[in-house]
Image (cartoon, rainbow, N blue to C red; front, side, top):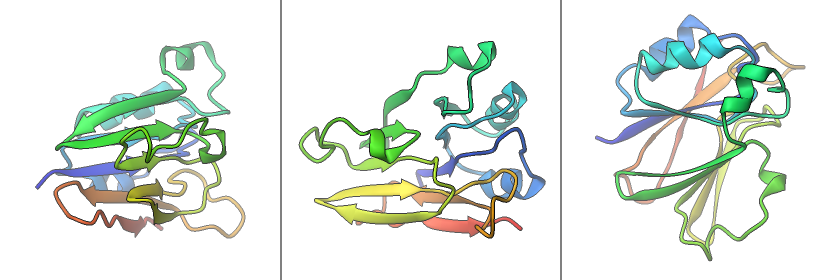
Length: 152
């Protein structure tokens, strides 16, 4: 199984429940608003990590991370951007299977023109009354259907 973990908006907090849910994934994608560099180091101890920076990642250490990322995992073409509203192209026209974003702290997913748009929600400090979540996704599954995991 080619299962990835998708996490976002940790804002410097990596909960033990998040680490537990990510155990066994082949890849982790962090969709920005990391908060502290230790978050990426800890995630890298679980699986290879692709990380982008978000709007709160303004410190010098965060500049090492790009604003977007493109990757291929298990034959799936994936685009990662912190805020989906900043997409400047049509992912379907460019041949992407999956767009991962964060920013709004609301977990959810939808498929549009055969492209899955996934927001894992926020795994960091609770914001308002929104749930604290992350997602996992089996890339060999067709159609792609992520699992949203509530952490607390």
